Structures are given as C-alpha cells and as structure tokens.
Amino acid sequence: KQEEKLKYHARDVAVVRAKQAEATLLLGSATPSLESFYNAEKGKFRLLNLPERIEGRPLPRVEVVDVKKEGGLLSEKLRAALQKNIESKKQSLLFLNRRGFANFILCPDCGHTFKCPNCSVTLTYHLRDRSLQCHYCDYRIPAPGDCPKCQGHRLQGMGIGTERLEQEIKLLFPETQVGRMDRDTTSRRRSHLQILKRLESGSIDILIGTQMIVKGHDFPNVTFVGVVSADTSLHFPDFRSSERTFQLLTQVAGRAGRGEVFGEVVIQTFNPDHYSILRAKDHDYAGFYQEEIQFRKALEYPPFSRFINFRLVGNGEKRTKGMAEEMGRIGQSLLKNAHGKEIEILGPSTAPFAKMRGKFRWQMLAKGKSPQLLHQFAKELSSRMDVQLKGKGVDLDIDVDPVFIL
Ligand SMILES: [Zn+2]
Ligand SMILES: [Zn+2]
Image (cartoon, rainbow, N blue to C red; front, side, top):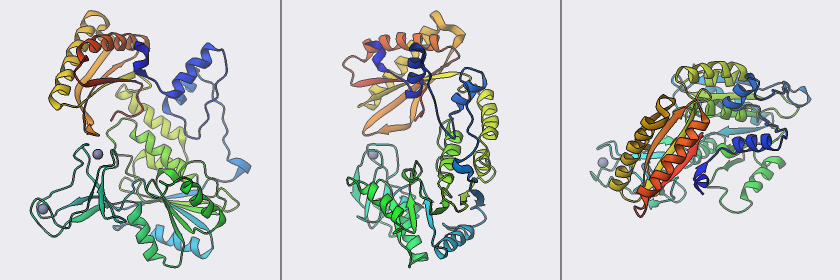
C-alpha cells in the first residue's frame, strides 16, 4: 500500500517492466531526454540513429531575432516572412505559449496587480468576455474598469497572449484568414479537429497557437513557423527549463517545410545567445547535450543524481507549514540514523507555486546517487509522516524523479 503513494515517470516504469519481461523497449524522439541520451552514452541503452528526415528533406532554415533591438510584438523579419508566405499562397504557423489577451493587468499609478485568491499567480486578461482568469483553477471575475486600490483610471495589460496576437495579425494582414488554436478556442468537442481540417483544406493562412500546435501535425503547405517568444519556458524556476526550451523550439521548428518546399523559421527572443536557442537554431541535439550535461554535472543534477520530491498540500497555511517543518525534522533524523552522506535534503520550503486551487504547498527534495537508498528513505519518511498527518487536513505527495518541481 505504501508503494501506491510514490509516483513515477511513465518512461521509467516502462524501462523497469521491459527489464523484468526481458523485452526490448524502443524509446523514440528527435529530442530525447537528457537522462535517456546519457544512458545511451553509458551503454545502458543502445542508441539507434535516424539522422535524416523522411525522404531526405532538408531541415528548415532558422533565424534568431534579438527582440531587445527590435521592440514591438513582431519583428521586421517575422512580418516580412509572413508577407512573403501570404503572397506565395503558403501557410504559416505562429507559436506563442500563452493564451489570453494580456498576461496580467497592472495599475501604473500604485503598482497593483490582480492575483488569484486561490493560487499564487496573477490573473490573465481575456478580451472576448472581458474577464480576468486564473489558468490554474479557472477562477474568473469581470475585468474592472478602475484600480480597486487607488481608483486610478489607467489599468493596462502587460505581456501578450494568443488572443492579442490574433488581433494584431488581423490588423496587419486584413485580407488573410487567421485561425487560433489554444484552450480557449478548443473547449468544445471536436473543435480542435475542425481547426486542423481548416488548415489542411487551406482555409486558414496563418494559424496562431500555443503548445497545442507543436506536436505531430504534418501540413505540407506550412512553410513558415514564427516563434513569437522563445523565452516563456526559459525562465521557469526548474533545472529542466533549458532542456524543455530546446525540445519545444526543435519541435515547433520541425513543423516548417514538411512538404516539397523548403521551410523557414524565425525565433524571437530576449536571449539570443542562450545555448538552448542557438542549438535549436542549428538542429544540434548533440551540441545541446554536451553543454547541458556539463551544467548538470557541475550542480550534480540528474542524471548525476536522483531526486524525490515530497510535497505537502493542505487547507490551513499554519498547519501545512508546521507539518513541513516536522517532515524536515524527521527527514534529518532518518539521515542521521541510517543514510548519512548518501542523501542530501533540500528544504522544506514553500513550493514555487506556494498556493494552488486554494491549498497551501510546501516541499522538500531528497537528492542522492543511489535510487535504492532514496527509495528506502522515501518509504520510511512516508510511513512516519502518515502517523503525523492523520486528521490534519494535509496530504503528502511523493514524486520520484519529478519532471516539474513546481
Ligand atoms: Zn492603482
Ligand atoms: Zn487560481
């Protein structure tokens, strides 16, 4: 029963199952996870290379635009590429991984921003129904006209989302058919497929979308992909943010030029020298891997260590904090008794999202080289915490090799 509490990565479960069944497991990706590639290098996995694209099609040409020098939402390069594509009757994708109109609303007079009362995030402005929404718990309120704090009249939207991008594109290219694919336009059943059908039949010239447009669509007439902002995933407070950015950019760039015509990609970024972006530009997984693996090694992050995240989620702020401190004490005492220097404890501390859906969140990370010792530590800590948590309204989630630490 203890075991059910521990959550594992699906890939790792598959690896273990395949080993038990003496079966062969095939992991396929243009951008394998750092852990998998490392395992291949170390001979734990065998690497099978498919160096070429289907039918030997060349990879798209990628240009990086430094938006610090450009200002505005769409750079000269991106606009020119869209214009050219429209004229030659080709289709374009524009990728922006944020939905809504403005990221958040700010009062320039007093600095007030609108926060979700249930989650520690700002509310996103949606123009269609003039609402402020939380993208984590769906809390929503009508957008106020004036600042509730200082009664100022100058509330303004900061940052852009797909809804605003759609508006801008329609203004810039009034004659073209513009589509948008994000969670707001695909909430109805099959609406997702309908948008893709319209793209396939050619009744959309420019499709704007979030992560939803990235995967697995093959449209031969799409020859241009614009990444409006490559930076959204780069600044996540998580050691995998570089890897995630590289993967996302590689996948989205790969949407361009799946047919006969050569593909082109423009990536807009505030960080044109970041290796995630430069390596994605060159379609250079091996180069990315070499840089990222050094960073991981220097900080002893996975694959050079393993993590287990112990997260406490509770209704009461004080009680959750108290339980987190108790978990810290128990964790340290377990280390003293048995695992000594093999395991390092980080925290407990408030989670990067300190409050989600009305619940308070604390977490503690255990880091070590031996999966067996970590696992044993997790089991012991979990059973000790079960006793502590009884009737307290605080739950413990244990995430083994967490993909996100948020
Ligand atoms: Zn104000
Ligand atoms: Zn919320």
